[in-house]
Length: 168
Image (cartoon, helix red, strand yellow):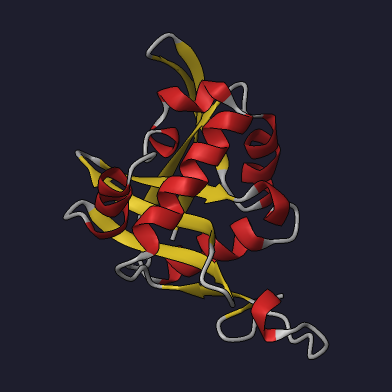
């Protein structure tokens, strides 16, 4: 169950199994780093992209609390485990979206809800880019379903990347 405190209301779900989407707090860094490490184990190509380079708490901290963070949210279980993350970052001339969801929580709407919560925290009319590696088939299918439009395909560090955009 995802809640904020209640995206879905499933009274039969024990409290320890509920997932809440919250603003990042101190202590979430290690959970995000663990999520990143797990993703790199699952998809080794991810070691070359920012979401796969938060393998230590210091890097994760900058993605949660750094000065370039426009908005970030984490999904945590009732036991405090970080199982999802979305953040929008200021880069020169663009806002950039990152999303990461634990493999066991995918395909249940958690990524979609994380993105919705992050976008709610942005000024209306903010254009956000999402760079998706051409090998990331799951995200390539998900982006259009979440309202993102393919803007262009580029070559970045020797890999093909599809750049999607969406307005907040």
